[in-house]
Length: 561
Image 1: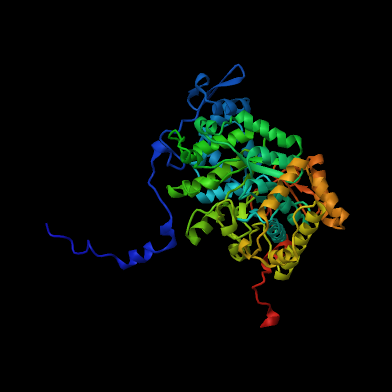
Image 2 (image 1 turned 120 degrees about the vertical axis):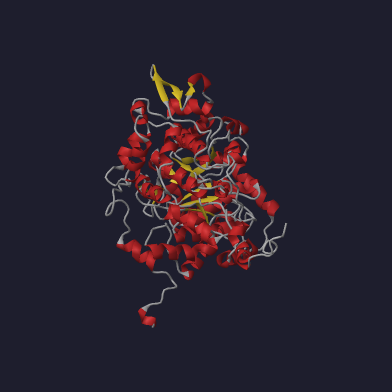
């Protein structure tokens, strides 16, 4: 046989394409048996429900005697047995059309969805394309005003830098801030730095420290953090058991936060069951919908989802990014707050990661990111976010280009320098009052102008760790922090921290989708409910907000022509 002379030559165009960043990403064909399928596995159950003597005896083709613990929890605590037979008899296509129909209110859709089973919800979502999902998300988001959350971490757990970065993030508009640790014993310092740094700029910013569950809860009870979200749940029984957990144990943990007036939501996401080899051949979306329905049954305020740290898996299969949008939408369909991912790096392609982000930014969610990296990704201890501090100008200009509110605001360099200095100085004073290792003027100067932890002088780690551990041993509380700052004349920051403690007594920010504005007023799905029913309704940017968004520092003024 004569060889094809073109077989050994390479197309120069293909060689150029192979060098593009997107071709550094990983992609796989569907493999349903192992769960590598986004939205519709041949092993997904068909929708069904049967009621007998006031309880569900059949759920998605499975009899009650065969229920696993997830089925039982969803059947007993989530599905509305009064309406389920009626709602399950509706055509899935008709329900999907209600989601995008501006003449059908959000409340009417919620009434339908509470009677659906997990398989029925997936069947409804499979009727929608990406644009229709975005239309539905704009209507179904619980809080009218969208918002944003950020990560503030650094590889050295440097508390001075962390406080300065938290202050800058607050100035840029993030309503929630999340940190975690490189060394777990640093956890109390990190919580303290985030609290002090954020409140230096304005009151009302919610902060959390993502840790193992016992320490995370302890810090919340001490008043050093004001919310929690890294309480993970999973879509199969085997994976749930891997963590020695059950839906009931997670619910008990949720009630512990609520009993102390602290906001909390669960975390889940497509791909986690595949990553832990426990998908049972089901689609990623079906398993995630089970998680969403468990969160609803547990009574938590919301859910952080959008694949989160497992995004590499759905992003590798066909329709995977669509499935992530679908899980965000499904969360809102159950009247839960959604912190919609975008918190993990997943692609080398700027085009691809922007396209992913726009699915949540354009319709708006309760938190467009559940962790925009407010620091360089090299300092991000959550393994890097979809966007980091080097992307801030791009993000602000996309807001301006699209006239869309992504939750951030342009800032002046001089404002940032001033707030970073104030936060670092406040930490210096606090450390003196609590007899912690001294913060030097050199550290304050470095933190004021730093980009990353590489710009910071090194601290004595052992002395810092001893002091950090004393926070838990001695039970230093948020009130102690406020009093220490007040004693040194830092009354404004002290009052803001004290106000955060008062919010926990009032309990208003336990409402769904709660954030606290600069006037210390809770904005939630109760007093700021999304009422979108088409053009002219729902969230509309005020003239003041548009002036803020459009006036980026790069724009040339007519007076400069």
